[in-house]
Length: 292
View: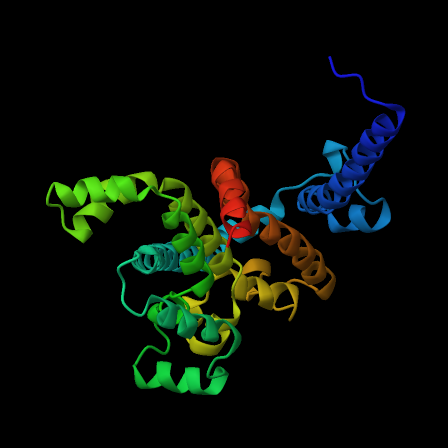
């Protein structure tokens, strides 16, 4: 057993108190939104959070699940985020591996041009014109392709691949394996941590994104969930199908409040479900990034 000095014990106590406060700051808003999604808005306004089951209701969730707008947005977000993740991981892994090989001619020059794009780009209007001229407006490709090449992801992948011993690749070359075969059968099986890290980063980034969809999509049936939530939470637009045409304004406000909280909970579920399974790889990604 380690005998800590008095100053060490004081420091540990301070750290525990500080971490406890930070956890409360992070967890309380999450619990508030979760509980508020099950409460009648009148109860929430008058009494605040209530643990009494008589004050609870699942009407907000029923209306969301019975309305096609949010369900369709949820499905679209899954499709966009999944497709974006697959394309981004494939491109960045291949680029990172290529840039990690010592035999690549002009490797530093290529990396220099990649780094420039992290600080300078063409801007919104030129990008829009390119996407328009390529015929990708109002299609899934306008969401998936423009940001698929992520220089930061390439740097993470390159850094990880540099940590794989060259002896493994040299042994494969001696056996007559091509460069692609070396990557596929030797390097890639050892790359599970970086693949999961990039997949997590890409999925979360695309799941929380709505700006590209707002610019490039016109058909509301193609809207991702975040753009639908933006209409509900910021612009206060609730679809008529959620409330019924004959209800009074007070009922409209009541239903709107329930739908807001319930929508936030449903939108957060995929990330909350994914993170525990990806946590160990996320920590690995942080270490890789620190060694850039």
